[in-house]
Length: 66
Image (cartoon, rainbow, N blue to C red; front, side):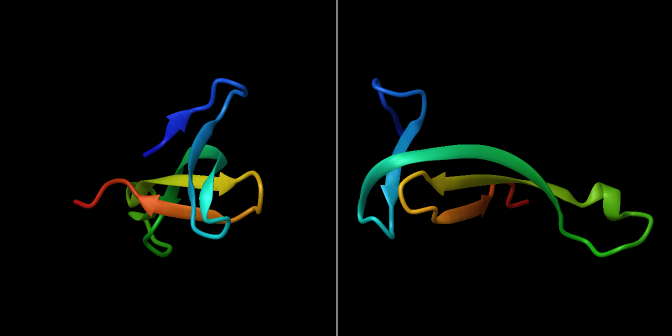
């Protein structure tokens, strides 16, 4: 589970590469999943993206599994 770090303005989360809780930069990005075409603009899905500030490991997870 993510927690806030009182020392800095960031989130500490477990990192699989570092094998410990480290500071992460967390953001939400809209990703277009469909290929080209007129309906591609309607296929955007939100992804939670986190990047470890220690090792640079970057992971993303789809937030809407409809």
